[in-house]
Structure formats: structure tokens, C-alpha cells
Image 1 (tube, rainbow, N blue to C red):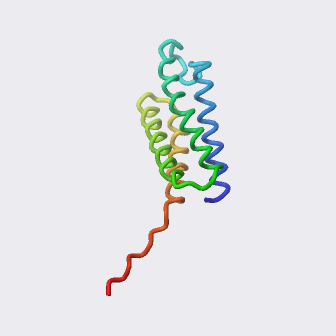
Image 2 (cartoon, rainbow, N blue to C red):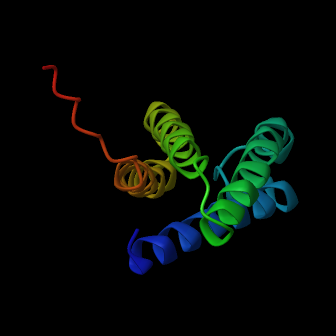
Image 3 (spheres, rainbow, N blue to C red):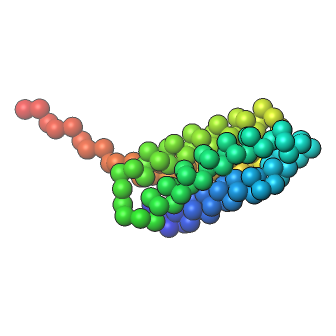
Length: 124
């Protein structure tokens, strides 16, 4: 995978993790105009998902080559796509734009690291 893609993945993953931490500290950061008490359970739910998934993804990106990287990137892309749908349903532009960008990036990277298909053996 190209170094540029790895850097973009890492930066996006760290920003996602940072948003989760900021959301826990200041829930109104995640959704403006909503009481912090109403949002608090949801930012914690986001954080308990984003932080471990992000940490594992960063370890896979910068650790030894692993067959787990492709499935993890696919999982991250699906999770981000879910965030886009939630953002669209509730009118949260940051979730739509940021999540959309990361969905495309994660899914592209998952495709880029897929194992090469071997040609079928010839039958004689």
C-alpha cells in the first residue's frame, strides 16, 4: 500500500479517536444544540467503539505485515458507512463528510491490500 494512503489512514484514524475523546469530555462538541445529558450515553458508545478499533488499526498499519489488515480495514469502512447513515438521519454534516471520506479511504485500502488471486490450475 502506498505510503500516502497509510499516512491518510493513520491521520483519519487518529482524528476519529480524538473526536471520540473530545466527545466524552465535552459531549456538546458532537451534536450542537442538544443537552449534554442527552448525548452523553451516545458519545460513550462511540468512544468505546472508536478507541479500540482505532488502536488496533494503527497497530496493524505500522506493525508487522498481517493478514488481519484487510479485514480490519473493511470493518472500519463498514463502521464509518454506518456513521454516515446516522449523520444523514440526524443532519450532522461532520459525520456525513468526515465519515464519508474515511469510508472511501478505508474501503479503498481494504481493496488495495486484498490477496492476489491465483489463476486456476489447468485441467489436463
